[in-house]
Image (cartoon, rainbow, N blue to C red; front, top):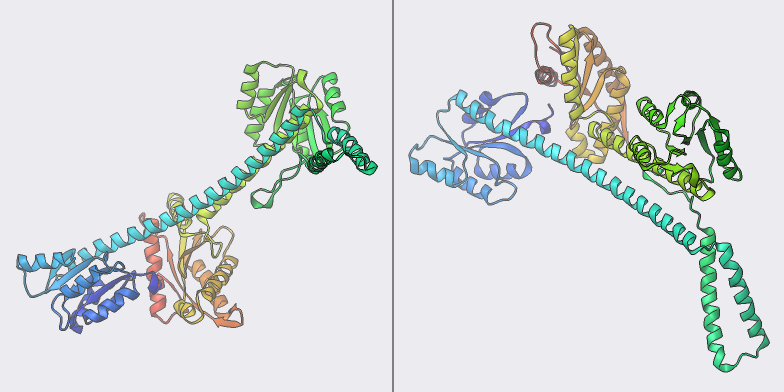
Length: 550
């Protein structure tokens, strides 16, 4: 693992031989042991690093362990770091209690027992690891919730806009006045007022009233102009930049109607609406044949047909996954049938006795509107699902998906006796890139590296960003030799590649650890990761820019 990804432990002791002994006992690939020989040095280090645990000698010159612990407890950044005191001076209860009062979580007495030391450290390392995992998952959940809330707010605003538009249309219909009907008497009124003003014979006591009439008429005229430009089929923008289909665009409708008279009635009503194309079939089977061959924006469905009912048609399109909105237009007009049809997935229901121009246009507009909202909601849900398994920076799968995929592949390989390889891949000296050129440059390098990796693996391999500058690749049905060859080819490709950022050209190498699922016995995905991590650790120790397989 890279240094900053390792779990850090601070050991504070004024005697170098004690520090070396503790380092030797605690040495593990996933741990980074940081040492300090004085209290002042320790206080500086805790401000620069995040430590899972501090092993603190009590008796030190200058500032003893109790004073260091007390100062740490006074800082918000360091007060929660667990401290284990190391002491050789006293096992008396008063001395031990004094340490606990300063913030110690435990005591170890010198000379240290290696087994006890490792055991106690492992407890706090695991606690730190679980806390980090919890923080990461909370962050991912918060981000997903925020995204969902934003999408929901947008959809709510869209729905409010649609409702307000429909309210205005209904108000106009209830008033029984179209823009043209309002405009005619308005022009007559304004024309007569202008004639009176031209005559110049308006009595002084009426001049003010005429002026107010003119002002009101002009306001009405402005409102009429707005009404004339207000179209009920105006497109609305939704998530992803999409718009609802409107009746000015071509709308293709499939009418499933076996009665000639009823179809002719609908056809005549829509005849003057040239943007609407109406296609007729007489049976459910013919309808499915047409739906398979071409695209339709809407389906008009009769309830009783020669080869089934409207309910059977709705159940069939649900099974087939057809998303074309369906409106039922039928003579079977009781409320029970209407309720069952809507529950089965119909977008709307209209008795044939109530079919009219306004009713048909309203039902077409509403059905297309609902279908658009449904599509946008599905897109939002798919986006959230994608976010939960993809790394935002590189676009590769994230660690969550990696864990699930690895356990699935390990289980399948063990069940069917297949080979399985795992590669842990790390950018060498990546910290220098961030420290020297900044994190934006580091992000750009990670993006290029991820693209190189994605281009270098097979379609059925699973490439992931494991964390920081570490990546992982699951190689199904791949032997050790095949995995080593693939990784060596990738290592050479990275070595020859020049990473660019603005006017910079960077040469970066990579180290790779490869492990293969053992054929004798069953292990978990976590165990396989540990094996690959050990191989990566060896590649780092051998000088980096190497592939090591174990």
